[in-house]
Length: 450
Image (tube, rainbow, N blue to C red; front, side, top):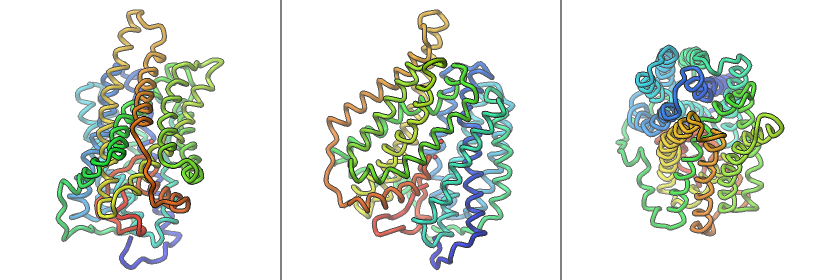
């Protein structure tokens, strides 16, 4: 936000909304269908698919360094955004022509290192133009979700999920986003005179909160729940395509639609259920989702697949957004920003990285058993593994986590949700260090996601 904010004009609002639309169209165009392309198009096994998906968590871990220690200190955000998208476009287009697994992994990793920092940069550019971010940002950010939905619907209708076309579509959109970035409002570097340390970037000041048992339980369970979470993000599209579900990419956008709904109704439930029950319901949603996938089929029980997709809203809002609110209400004001960054590192970085590796190995294991006739229903066996993981985390959390009274009343809970929605970008939070001044007396530096 500018030091001397001016009223947000319609022309700037349109440009910011278009920026968000392009940003998440790129991600939604290729990321969801990658497993189908690798598994059906290139005939690669589950272990490599999991490894390929691990590149984005690696990007999430490295991105705070690029944004906090380089971009925030030396470059205007819109120029950095443009350069990264143009570079990413070239890398992703090249990736679409590579079939050698070892080479493809490193190319996807290079792309992840280009794309992940842009998630923080688009938020920085948007916040810098807003005079009332709590009210204005959600209306701009929602175009990112719409971009993801449109990409999924388009790729699904084109019937190209098992080809490299989604990568080429995303690369083309990335060129457009890169060129468009240079027409965005100027957002100069904010930390020219500020020394940024590794501890600042990773939010390690929040480690002292781990001395409180319930907070430590929450952090550990957040990491653990991200391991079964990766099974859905990495293999759901391949699973649906192998089960013969038409337009799988398009139908998976029902998950993003449900996210919008549950985020809107979340304040109602938050005020009545409290943090502990909300978090338990969010984890329970993952458990139920995997059971629906395991026991459904593409004939009479196909509704179970669709119900599993629609569980995305509860999975995301009730656990991840509630978790952001819990951290906001638990951490002292002086380290609240560090605590949010630490949570992002643990979940979307470390947790999803571990989950990508484990999910790939599990799928590979059951693929080998199925090839030898030792498993009758490959995907049922696969989905029962993350269901068991989620169930174990639920039991651990229910026994060990004790909700302490907070200063949050129902009205503040709704406000806190809105701030968390802005901080997470509704999809994936990436730490944005020091770029935006406080949004309210309860929040310090917001952080920047299918």
